[in-house]
Image (cartoon, rainbow, N blue to C red; front, side, top):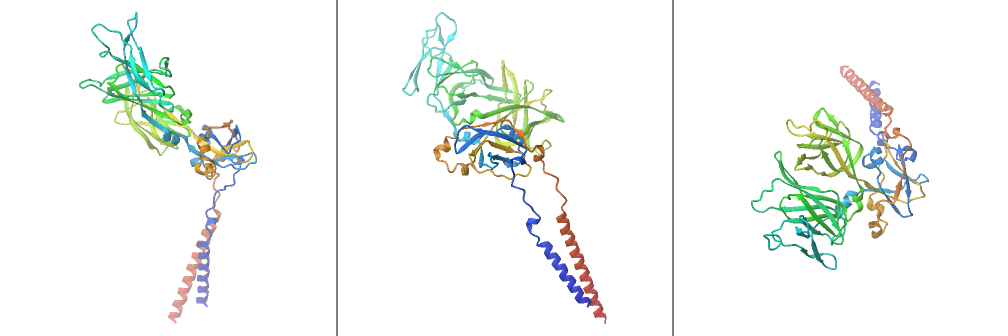
Length: 482
């Protein structure tokens, strides 16, 4: 009788264990709710399209970067007037810029000093012969004889005429390459270069302020800068003149141009840092998770040259990952202020940056450095599904990624239409609060009653199994003793 009761206990315990181990997975791992409406999101931006077309575009507003809480903008949605979600995609414009960048070597012609009538100063007097396409074939400098000189061969070169007539896109930078004569000391040379532009070789206009071209030894480091910024210049000809001394003779000149409109969308902001413990470390709050393409360190004091690193993180405490590490400087030399140029970076999003001086005794001084962050906004593309007005909603703690790839969204369009999409054809209104900040915060998890119940059944099954096994053992001992 005892043995029969023990066997029934074992069978009951086994059944309990089987029921615990075969509980459906969905009972333990419930998926997040994907049926979200406009009212579920923290904020929304009204969108107004300018014309009827299959696909509309807009530059992602900064409010999205600051208000989105999900990775890869998973908590971004577009709703039409009926409250239906609209298919959309995103792409980084910096990628399209890289695909269209061109580095082109341009022809240039040296211009020598020419003596003006009735004046003691040198002037640039020249004439140029051009082809039908505007390219320069020959430059004639109009020189007057000088005492002790039969021709102009020994005269100083005071400018360069650059032929950019064959470029098909605006120039945004020039790279200059110099070569020094044998035995010539070019270790400390500074020149303030003035860039002028013209479309007819007679009327030249200034392009920005003079920029320093430098080769200087300072603090054990060599500071070299031979790049001129001329963003968006679309002239056929350029003229470079200077005061001071160039670091050698110009032997090559390259122009950087771009066929993309994305350069119109460069956004640069400067941020002040908070000292972290000592003058060696500063933390910069960007006010939200922003994309970063370039960072420039603006040192607060003159004649400072310091090795430092820039790190990025999604939170102030960290962890931080390395973005850039180099020597930064701010030096006044022969009347010119020399500052380290921006550091081009591999694009990433970050909410905090940390600047740290490297080496024993290194310090940024009394005045804190600033960081100048440059980014290009991402482009959002959406289909005109249903009637407007459309709403761009964002900010939800558990939203799942719903956007399409750019290829899938644009697949129905002919290639020529895809290529001609504007940078933006959508007007974006002011952000309005919908569900508010609470939508960004995950609610506290309820007590896991189901898990407690399962564990209780499991423990009960183990106890029943143990009691049945013990009873069976005792009955076997009693039969053996008879």
